[in-house]
Structure formats: structure tokens, C-alpha cells
Length: 311
Image (tube, rainbow, N blue to C red):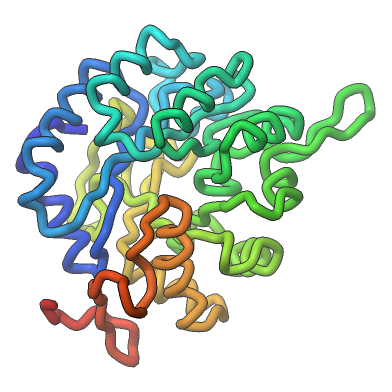
């Protein structure tokens, strides 16, 4: 979000050291001039970075205000064609994914525009009910961003229960879900439940790592993300008032360790960090060790520590 070349190089250097080979940087809700600047800078440096970055992920600003979480409410509103059309016309080749709240997408115009431009839509920061998820699904949405983090659950209206995003994601077999496997956002039992219900073919493990990813409480004195102040406590980023998590400080190697510690096999864990997310994003030569696939390897020892090999 800094929009500087230095920021991209630092981010990629950090995550490369922790095992990541391919990454989609996430931009949070912000003024569209800020997003445009960050995209312009990315285009300049994308071929010089330590990681392969096929494109970026816009997380917002088309969210439900009551589900904003650590996103800055100043920028949150319904989809506006006057904003997203010119941005995609200019930077559509760089934007590969966009998270939004489907209940705000009138007549599914936004999701249909994304799919028409080969941008992966994802449900996030949303109070959607089953009807909204179903409509989004029927119009090409096959992904839920960080399940259980700012995603709706069952509500009651006049005594009648309505499914939320969580239940709808379980109901639709072909819906992929993400899990922030940092050991804080999801307790081990809940992570195992998600995997049990959706299967390793439909679960992607993500870091949700923000600015201080890879740092410790001792290293980090405080900061902000998208204009929202946060602190690091208990191994996770929290809003300064401690009312909610502000994101994680995990790196890929931590996902590996935390998920295996929860009782998931190494093979299944690696699959949910490689093959499954590659399938979500349509990366046809990523995520498997097989003929015709890219030879990008992350090597770790028996204690799941990254070994510094270059291939």
C-alpha cells in the first residue's frame, strides 16, 4: 500500500526467506488514487522481485460496513462502476483477484464484470445470506476469503433461520475456502473441522500477513495498515483498541508448522499451500511435482524449518 519500489522488494525478500515462491500481494480498502499508484509501482518492479507475482489481490473497498474488521471504514462502500471499470481498464492485466461483499452487488453486475475480465472474485467482509452466496456462485464466484474472519453465519428473522457465508460455503461442494492458519485466527480444532468438511481439494491455507509479517512483538513498536493503527500481541496483529484482530504476522513456514501441529499430515498441509491455491487461481503449471510443471521448490528439514537452497 506504500506505493514504493522499496516496499515491494522488502516484502518479497521477507516472504522468500520463509519459503514462498509465488505470491499475490493484497491491497486493502483505500482511496482509488492510492490503489492506482501502488499498481503503477508494481508494474515497474514485478519482473525484478525475488518472488514470482502473477498479479495482485484487491481486498475491498466493496464490503459490508458491519463486517469491516480491520479494514478502514472510511473507504468502504458498495461497488461503483465509475471506480472499478476505469481501474480494470488500465490495470486489469495486473489485478487477478478481487474480494467483495455479494449482498451489495446489485444484479451481480460487479462479479460478472470481474469474471468477464478473468479476475477471480472472492466473498469477503460480508453479511451475505445463502441467497446472495448462491447468486454469486451462479455468476462465477468460487472462493471465500478467510473463512470465519468477517464472514456471516446463521441469523434469525422472525424465528426463521437463514444460512450465512460459512454454512453456504460448506453446502456448495465446488466452493473453495481460505483458512488463516497462523494458530491465532482459527483454533486447531476449527481448522481441522474446515478441512474435514471441505477436503484438501477445496481448502487454501493463507498467511493474511500484514506489514510486520515475520517479526516478533519485540521487533515491532506499533504501526498502521490502511490508516488503521495496530499492535502485535500474543503472536498476532490486533487493532490498537484490542477490539479485533488486524491481520496476521505469519509467514508460509509458520502455516506449515501450525497446521501440522494441529494434526494434519505434512503432505495434506503442503497440498493446501500449493496445489489447491494454484487451482483456484488457474495456475496450470504450479503446485505439483510432475512433468510439465514449473520446478519451484521449497526445501525444509525434519523440524519443518526452511533450508536455504536456491534452484
